Image (cartoon, rainbow, N blue to C red; front, side):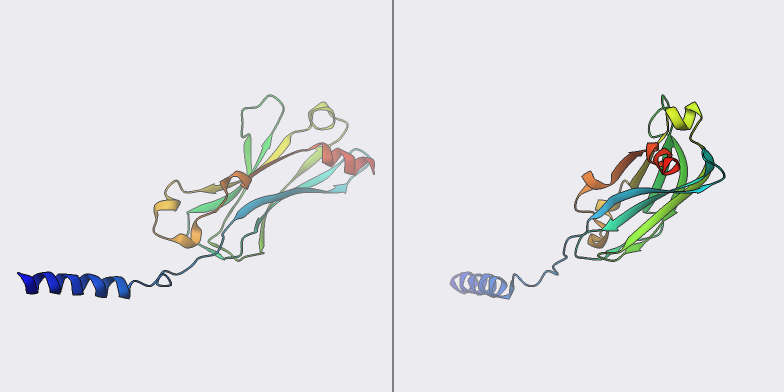
Length: 167
């Protein structure tokens, strides 16, 4: 019995010694952010033309985002005044990787009339959303876990398009 106790104590000691705090790989911060929605126009005349809406996401973390196909996408929505949120889906970009500091965009072009009530007086909002598979945090891949989900959604008024027609 005494030998068994000593052997157990020796085994426990060996286990504690072999546990090194550096054994686990350290993953830096992965933080994908809905960074901006920008507008450009090609004028037909003073009030009409084609507006292009571009949503941008950025990996503002210090580690690369690496995932599997179908687990994430950028979605761009257009929401007219009074319409249910999030609005009409007008663009989607699926992706699997986004390195630290890199950006990814989704764009949508449409006719625009800054003198019409639907666009000039009551322009729609545009919204980009980083859309993740519901199980992404439990898929066993720490390289696709977004650190901050609160910065994954951005909405901007289309009134900025009207400003471009005025200038």
